[in-house]
Image (tube, rainbow, N blue to C red; front, side, top):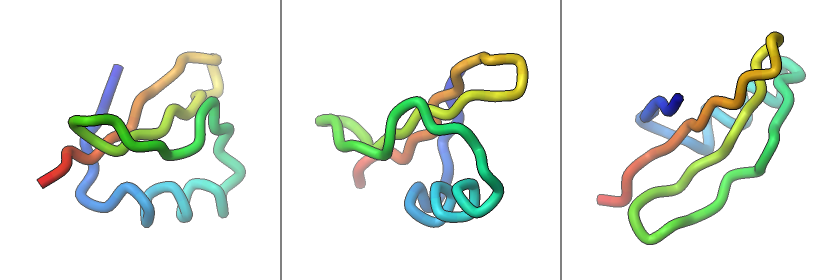
Amino acid sequence: MAFEVSDLDAFVQKRKGRAVSFITEAFNTPVCRMAVIEDPDHNHITIHKRHT
């Protein structure tokens, strides 16, 4: 599952303040910048922001 956010860096900082578990830190791909978090049921969720 993936969700696009308007500001990935702000999203990441806010979630780190709430002790969200990060599977991967934010990184760049040719299409977007993304990070992967884990929910309480251990599902992985991709959060991304497409390059403009």
